[in-house]
Length: 51
Image: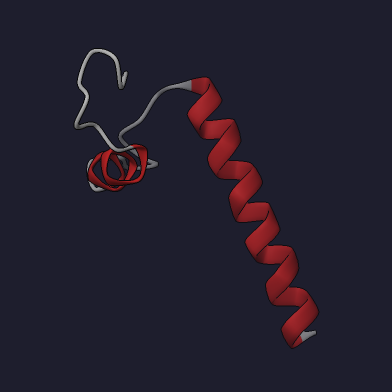
């Protein structure tokens, strides 16, 4: 990407993309699996801290 757009910065690009992503509106199976994993980790951490 940097070769095509030299001023592109991964972090900035990721932050801008994140603002447009939603769990409910995204039908990508890989995105759903990724989000399910993140939610699982968050739930486990919550149980460790509150259980």
